[in-house]
Length: 286
Image 1 (cartoon, one colour):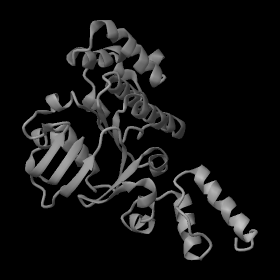
Image 2 (image 1 turned 90 degrees about the vertical axis):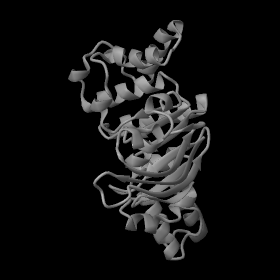
Image 3 (image 1 turned 120 degrees about the vertical axis):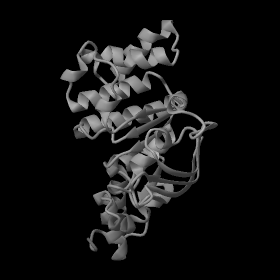
Image 4 (image 1 turned 45 degrees about the horizontal axis):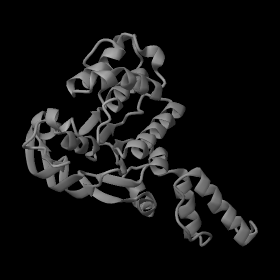
């Protein structure tokens, strides 16, 4: 479990708090999507989980963050990494090796993976990301998307209890982005891995996450199931968060007295909504 207790953090030289009064609990096995406009504090929240705040990024730190029993102030990021693996937004800063295979092997060796499991884990990770052909490639020759997949492969090979990802699909096309989310969901279900993902592609967040954490100006303004958070779609749009069009459609239909059910979180539920309206009205109100 990850527990935030009145967490406040202000970067050195900044006049504002990047995180301001965060109180929440993330339970084992949850899939959490973190959304918010630029500068809302999303990345800083991930740094607070893996301990780079306050150990690497200096500033004023108040409150506490506890990750599976480890206080992030009393324990260094290297210790926390055994519980919570991270994929950073700056992929180049995360790479430690020059060859893809060695990048995956580095973590396995450092975290004491049994030697007899190493080869299987490397193969499994490469296969999961569909990058088997990159195994012997120099990382410097990879595209941004290939580097992101390599970083994710290196992390999932470790099978951490918690996986924290900051914009992992930023360099990927829509199909590859969906494949990443499908992979994360499978890890979530197969291993009970807790997933925390910062991602701008809100449609994917709505489809795959169990809960959404909405950040705004350093505060956690909503933390609830996807359907409950989507009820605040107008507020989210005022914060600069682009809600899925199907949610905006549902809200407009509701405002005009045509629909009164839950806001759809994916295309299947959107189709169900439209069919329900057509069945009830015969299409006359549309």
